[in-house]
Image (cartoon, rainbow, N blue to C red):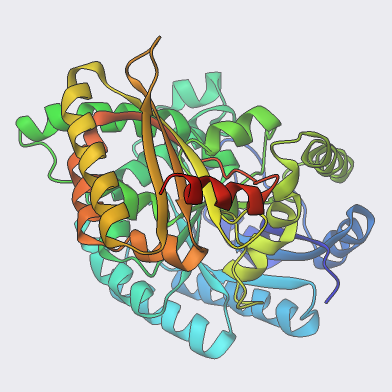
Length: 432
């Protein structure tokens, strides 16, 4: 297959789906009419825009009938069969009936060949993160499923607010953030680590929510409102499509809570005019080529990350690996002032133990800014990607992560590319 762009965010809107919504009087449930869609028109646009493959998911609103969900999934499966190099799909589920949803997921994955599952932020007020959905996530975890999220109308809804500010302009972003926050607060993604979740629309408000939620977690825990939150495990499960108002600045914000191998291209076809989507994609290609800090991730964002996520390749994009065999990073950390002294103790301990006990850890060198003491920099050098992955599993690293998560206000992990790896190795010889 040619290495064209892979679009992980597009929608299937069948005539049968529209007809049922019309019969139920629900065509304007989301506050605006459904766009017209057919497969041939989408393929035409894909050819014009240079998109090799699109992942189809059912549009909002959620059908009330399990039969309509089944019919839509089967229609998407037929398109994948007819155009195996152009379409993939994530199956809809007949929630809020959890048992029926599990059976539909089983049928879609085993019989229809679905590439994943589409979940709404809420269905009739049943929000992601709700305890009754644990059995569904347990099943999806067993199947190592990819889940594509999409916001739906909040429930209950304030119709006056909805009319003043259409859902797509703001509330959809709140809905997405709300659903992911719910899952994080209950450690859903940490408890079911084989589930990979694609968050739409440039991550909604998550790049703002995560540091705020971290800072407030100790207060919430003191009042017994939430328990322990495994931030690292929860965030590791999240991927982000760049549908909507993407920009270099938005991508840099996302990279404060994730890594480049978790970013994906998305169009939101057919909700935006084809010519606008084409211009948007061309603009993305341009800044991913011209911006020096983002250029290394161009092919990853446009197709390589999606290829790995969808199982089209077993070679995971190496977002953390620079040139040469060693992995080199400069961790940029800001600590809340009230936790600074305690954090420094944790940092010094994990750095010392890592260098002493792990042959693959060449250097962990923490530094504190003289002008801004809460700003910490750690030079990290590992013998290989494998050594880094092993480091993340050690008891001393896990103790450090668990103990300091609430202390960290922000964290960036940029990969550094050594200009002269051979000379750099001589530095360590001179220190003996």
